[in-house]
Amino acid sequence: MKTQFMKAASLALQNKINKLKLRAFKAVTDLSKCKSCGTCIKICPLKIREFGLDGKAVTVGLCFGCNIRTRKCPNNAIDLYVYH
Image (spheres, rainbow, N blue to C red):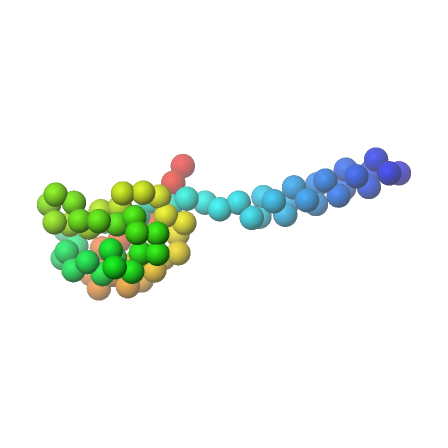
């Protein structure tokens, strides 16, 4: 009986842990839409955006997908993709 309870408790705990796992995202800039306004660089909470050599905003790290940049980009130049 105790073993069954422990298995059930362990399974319940594992399900909770799995729900908490965060996914990483990659923010991809459509360079034909980017007007180098810098909005995404200013508002990114993780500060993983910067201007590339061509003057366009690029992502230099993985994000957690807060979606702030994609919503605030005046040119809809940023898309988020789950990073595998």
